[in-house]
Image 1: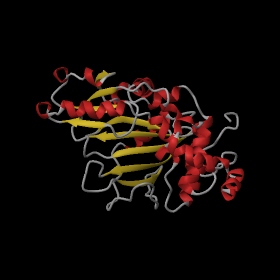
Image 2 (image 1 turned 135 degrees about the vertical axis):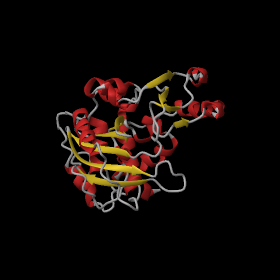
Image 3 (image 1 turned 180 degrees about the vertical axis):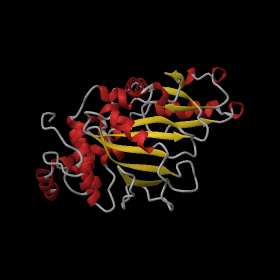
Length: 302
C-alpha cells in the first residue's frame, strides 16, 4: 500500500488513470485519458510540453488543434461536400442514400450493387454485389451496433466527437475491392510521404503497408503491418493524387488524405487526422522522429 501511494505521488496520471482507463474511461478528461493510455502502451510518460515524435505530436494535436471544420472533414458523408467544393465533384464517389436509422434502409430503392458504410467510424463497410442474395437483417444488425459506437472515446480523436452517426449507401465501383489504397501524409499542404495498402480484401493474408517518400521512393520501415512481398508499382495518377492531397491539406498542421485509382479514375477516400490514433510504433523507431519532425506545432494553439 505504501509503495502504491509513493507511485501515485510520483505519477498520479498512471496510478489513478490505470484503474479509470478500464473502469470509467468516460469520466476522464481527454488529457488524463491520453496520458494514462500512453503510459500503458509505451511504458514511459507522454511529453506534451516538448513533443518530438510523430505519435507524441498527434496526441498534442488532439488536445490543442481543434478547428470546427475538422468535424466536417472526418464525417464521410459531409466530407464529400467539403472536398468537392475544393477539388471538384468528379473525384467523389456518388452517394445513393443516407440513413439515420437501420430501419430506413430500403433495398427496393437501391441498385443491384452498392456499398453500405458508416460515416463516423472505421471498418463498418458492407459490399453488395447481388441484391437478390443480400442479407438485409444481418446488415441491419451490423450497422445498428456500429451506429452506437462512439469512435471518439477509444483514442480521444476530437473531430469525431460531434459527428452525427448515419449509414450511407454509395455507388459500387467496378474492381474497387482489388484496387490499392493510396494514403498521403500531408504537413501544412505538402506531401512528405505516403503508404500503399494492399491485400485488404484477402481474408487469407494480412494487410500490407508499404511506405514511400514524396517521389515514390520506397522507405525501409514498417508501421502496423508488414511490407508487401512485391513493392507496389507507382500508380498512373500519382502526381494528380499528390496534387489533390496538397490542395485539401493547406493550412492544416497534419492530415492524411486517401485516394483510390480505379480504372483510370481517381476517387477521394477519406481524411484522417490521427494515423493509428497515434499509438502505433515505427520499426525502426527513428522514423517516429522523422515523421514528427515534419509536424510544426503552433504554440498559439496550446
